[in-house]
Length: 287
Ligand code: FAD
Image (cartoon, rainbow, N blue to C red; front, side):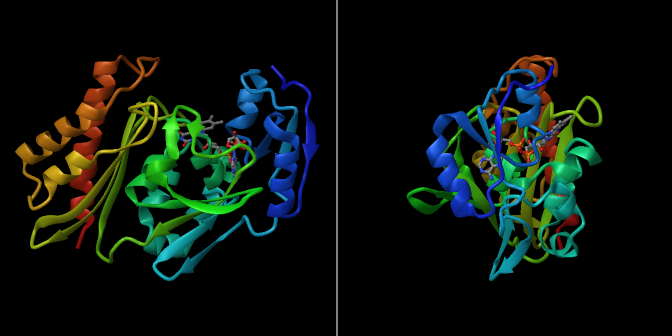
């Protein structure tokens, strides 16, 4: 299939992009890396009359340290994140997760902004952003606002983005020095979306878990924060009974779709296993 006809726009500034989106209304969609939008257009599941290409927009690329946060421009690609020494040092889980997305071709074009704005429950970055307590900068005709990643996802492909709003950057608090981290993703083959995945960021003190955050990918119509599971491991040394308790608490909030990746019970079961594996690997990395 090839996409239906559309008009192509290439604004040079955020203000121009926002103005175009406001003027063109529901018939327009921002175009980032195109690796979710264009396949949907080829299948005619998306038929925008106007594409507003963000590649020419100043200021949407790259990342910077801003105090205790890393601020990443929406048009920064997964490949650029993987190539960064600064990200390797301060946010290694971002690289571990990016490396599990699709294949090099997709990572060369796909952007962090497109990944988190898309609202696809199969995308890996949204649950990670929730785990890291990230926030998104949204800019529209009526100005800019910040929203926590944990409040952004409202349903499959349904987010807090208002019509005409652009997601311009992602701000991530840098985790504590010595934190442990892991992103565990079960997939059927290289290039596939997750059957189930879990992100863990934790700190250890005296051999016990001092703080913990757990996110879940593709186990519900939105990414999930598994708060009870995270609470269950605080103050423990992650013995077998605690790991099981955390997995059970995480499974209790999962409601994955039954699809080609497996029936509901299987996906919940492997979701629990991803949580246990991620906890153990994160703890082993913490210092
Ligand atoms: P686009 O496809 O250009 O846009 C996606 C949607 O977000 C569109 O609706 C667009 O209008 C909107 N949008 C884009 N940018 C903005 C913005 N700044 N503000 C507001 N709205 C915006 N992803 C994973 O996470 N895990 C995987 O395992 C995975 N596997 C894949 C396998 C294949 C074969 C392919 C083709 C893709 C896969 N993807 C996967 C998706 C890939 O990561 C996409 O790149 C990503 O989902 C969307 O980013 P993009 O930059 O390509 O956005």
